[in-house]
Amino acid sequence: MNYYSLNRQSPPVDFRTATIAGQAPDGGLYFPESIPQFSTELLKNLASLSQADIAYEVMRPYVGATIPEADLRRICAETVDFAFPLVPITEQIGALELFHGPTLAFKDVGARFMSRCLGYFSRGETKPVTVLVATSGDTGGAVAHGFLGVPGVEVVILYPSGKVSPLQELQLTTLGQNITALEVSGNFDDCQRLVKQAFLDEDLTSRRTLTSANSINVARWLPQQLYYLFAMQQWAPGAPPVVSVPSGNFGNLCAGLLAHASGLPVGHFIAACNANDAGAEYLRTAIFTPKTAVATISNAMDVGHPSNFVRILELFKQEHAAISQLLNGYTVSDADTSATIRRVEAERGYLLDPHGAVAFFALEKYLAEYPAAAGFLLATAHPVKFPEVVEPLIGRKIELPSTLHYLLEKPKQSVPLAPSYDALRAWLLPGNA
Ligand SMILES: *Cc1c(COP(=O)(O)O)cnc(C)c1O
Image (cartoon, rainbow, N blue to C red; front, side):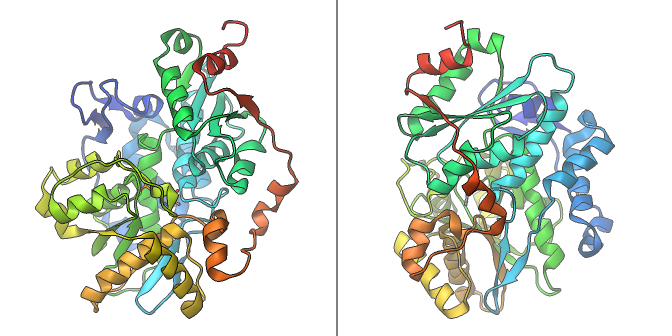
């Protein structure tokens, strides 16, 4: 499988090159040259196959010859080594819980797959690869855990001091080994600016091999299809489900649409957005207008210009009519999100996180119009990651899952960094600044 740049000014590359580069040299996102079809065997036997075998079958054509079978099987098995339960909430609505991975965020799957592929590709390289990433919270933790202990890969995470939640900070700063957290005395935009500047610094990149673990990387994007297959393993026979996806950069949703294009029998998709709804607005109006991001209580979706939207347009050959037949967009306010968390907990005993609540509310709206249908939402994070939002709504504390208790015993280790590029450069090239 080759990948072409959506800007069409760079040559096609294989999976290895696309993974290492992240973005095409012309600034475009990489897109697969063809859409593989799932075999009838795979679809027929879905319920009895292991998650690892499904992952291998789905990822094989995308990876092509760049990783041999035994290594890819190991990478796939390690990537999906936890549960993805589809939990009923009402008669019509279930939650596909994607938060049972090491950092309680659905981004664990993409981060684990990408890190292991990069680890494979950097074998035998004399220079270690440095993964440089800026985070506003969740991405950093998922990437750090994904790369922990991967030989030949060093991870440097920049995060804004005092602006991530205490749990997120522990996930970033307590790992040690090949992970370093730089605590920047600035905001997320400062962190992102410093990382961008580093990638443009040719003197630096000639001395250190830098890679980004950005969410547009094909190795992070493509394995997200697996959620939808794991859901269908558990979907009781009947009409194909309506799937509601809490969306920010639209990577997760676009992966679901790709799985559908490969033959997965999903009935309909919902793009559930908070106030940052450029994507939902396009679905309603056929006009795509990127906006400046505004802060909401579902902050992992505070994206004004969703970067994966161009991939959705490409998948449907830019035809709004075709897209809007399969996909509806909803905008959900913070007030409706809060009310949904409180109501679903009180009436159904199920605790949604703010992102899942956006998707629940949108799905309910859709089902009010199509009462014979049923479906599920993707629960993208554990509610314990957003205690400041969720706890006041339900009037009690949320228990930290026992799998995370170890974090509380570990000391925080971070390197303070001024929000200036000279400071970052000096840290990356000690003795050469
Ligand atoms: C990243 C994230 C999202 C948005 O996913 P996209 O693929 O960017 O649309 C939703 N919920 C949570 C909890 C996230 O961390």
